[in-house]
Image (cartoon, rainbow over all chains, first blue to last red; front, side, top):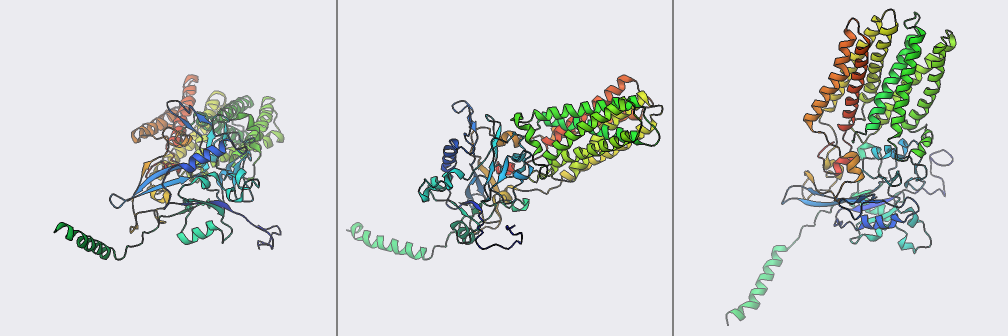
Length: 246
Length: 316
């Protein structure tokens, strides 16, 4: 709804829908994004620290905003390994916000879903409402924690502009993560989504997740492979034969 | 879902109290006086005790109870907030009703308070049920059966307690036995209907969850089966603790038998018995609540959250 209630976009009104694009083609499943997320947000004033339970004990565990899982699709030999990072999808219709009784969970104008740590009573209902497992209760603080899209980085004007991105995006060594505004059709995330058939997870549940996943590319068929191989073999033979036959 | 005992006890205890309060209020405003005032007062007291015990238990579920007072804040969107608001209102109205019944006031005020108490009881019950039924991420809860079961089971346990009061205090307890029998049979059928409906093959799959249809698959294939290779964490996490609970099928059957035998079978035998003594009445109420605790435990244990797909479950 626009300020005049007409539903028509007003001149000068800018809507923003921030989110991530994750390229399943290039992700190698190294967990660097998850580790960078943990490192940055542990010191974040928004919802840090991300508590660890017995970090040097027998069963280390703790709060993470981003978790990478690995799947095999299809049966060997026609199978493919898919590395699958998941964090908050910053849903347009976020049920985690709707079910929250205290108002601790809220959605910002720019689309980021956050938890006000001072208001949360730790009832877990938002975690139950989220199909993506994006929310984790911190046993130390008794409050719910989740991906903030590094809200304390992306708007920090003291940082060089190219660093005003979520920690996971900056850390990715294969450039499989992109951050941007999905409401802007010319943004990198919008163009990538359009070009590569980017999709949101489980849209049938009706939460309108914002983050997009790019499916693996279909490999281009190699043309002239047989020619190349026979050329190479003949070349090698012509080089080797004078030596062998000497 | 992990069956959190504080929540299991809360829904069963408060449910019995709310069902009892609603039925007592209805009986109380009935044109012909079926229960004398002292019995009504005792019933209201018992109902409020069960409701408060349940609400206190629900607070144990909170990881930061010092913020519990904030739960009234989102009445317009959150069923949990609505439940908190209506439950608080119900306690106030219930105490007024209790005072009127103890004072044996017989006027329009008592009738109106009784009507409000009944309406509030039903509202709180619906709110509690909707907390679960509104969660789209949990197929076994996101169904019309959930509010139906919560309402009927609350009234069934309430009617067993009410029948106990009637056999102690009313001149004719037969109408109360018919009431309990009717509600009990309906509640049992609705619970079996829920179990039957949950057996269907619908639900989301791991392939659906990771987007095999959208292109996450080997080149050249249109369909493919997916399986978890590695879950990415070495030990339990919040997600595995909260959503990883699994119940073996044969255990589920055993729990269902226990829930039906204790929750319905034994109390029903007492309901149809021509008359019962005090000890039997106590046992019937206790068995009914124990059976419903098993039923509610199952309601949690058998619910499979969607995030389990990402942890490797083939379907929800």
